[in-house]
Amino acid sequence: MFKKYITMGLILSSFSFAGSIGIEHSGVMVTTTTADKQEKNYVVKRNIPDECKKVSINNKMLWTGNFAHKSVPEACKSTYVHTKGKLLSMHLDKDLETYGELEVLYFLKEMQHNDQILLVDSRKEKWFNYRTIPGAINMPFHYFEERDDYSFHFSYALKYLGVFIQKDGEYDFSNAKTLVLFCNGPWCNQSPRMIFALLKIGYPAEKLKWYRGGMQDWLGAGMTSTRK
Image (cartoon, rainbow, N blue to C red; front, side):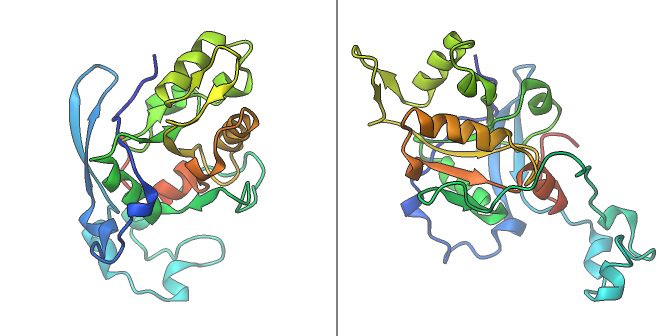
C-alpha cells in the first residue's frame, strides 16, 4: 500500500551525539527499494563538490545582494523554488520536537537497528516519486486529514504505524511508532496538517517529530536525495 524506501526505527532517548562527530560528512548507509522493486544503496550525507571546499567563507563570497557572488562555482550553489505556501512556526505543539538536518541523520542512523520508528514523507505520491530523502516512506497527509473519505487507506496506515482500533472504536496507541514527518519546506503545510490530524485522534505528541525544513532545507544543505 505505502511506497517505502526503507522500514526502520528509532528510540530517540538512545541518541548519542558524542561518538559520531561529523556525521554529515561520514554519512549513514541506507538500503532502499525503488519504485521498480530494485534495491539501491545510498550513503546519506552532505555532498560538497571538491571545488566548493576552496570557496572562502566571507560575506562577499557567499552573498552579493540576494545571490551568491559571481565567482562562486555553479556546483556550489543550491537553489529551490520557495514562493509558495506560508512560513510556519518553529514549534507546532509544546510536547512535539522540531528537527533539523543533523537530527534527521541521527534518526536515520538509529533506524538501521530499530523497527519502532518511521521517517514519513507526508506529500502526495507524485512528489515522493520525483525526489525524497532515502529511507522515507510515503504516507500522504490527506489520508489522515480526510480519513472518512480514505477509510481504507487510513485504517491500513494505522496498522502500519502500530495503532489499532479497539472494539469500542477507541484507538490503542500502546505500540505506536515514533515518526519524523516532513514535506517540501518551512512554508509547506502538508506535514503539519498530518501531524495535527494524528494529534486529533490521540497520537502521542512525544512520538511525533517534525522536520520543519523539509526538502527545501535538505537540498539546500547539499544532502543526499533519491534523485541525482
